[in-house]
Image (cartoon, rainbow, N blue to C red; front, top):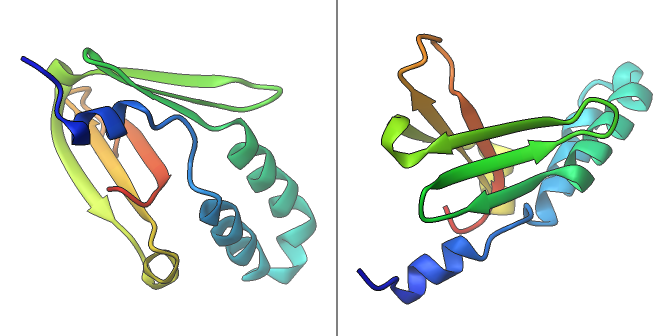
Amino acid sequence: MNPSPDDDAILALERPHPDLLKYYLLSALAIPPAFPFLAPYLYFRYRTMRYQFTAEGISMSWGILFRRQIILNYARIQDIHLRSNAVERWFGLAKILVQTASGSAGAEMSVEGLKEF
């Protein structure tokens, strides 16, 4: 099976769109007393967030002091949701929530900052 041009664009994604940083800063501004704590956390989350889409699955990593990495094989994925609030839609962003059969009620992975969702 040969990859299509759309597949090549997806496989080339590695970083979130720069508008995600703007969204993070606006989110931190929503709670002014917490801004000095939230802004650096969200900034470093954005700066260290990496995606890798391969033929076998998706991996996502972020973090400086506590590095977190999630790797999902396509065979384990059972459900995919697309979610965006009003501000994310204004920036043209969305979150892709990927669920597996792990038994948890929430999404196993939340891919953020993509405009090509």
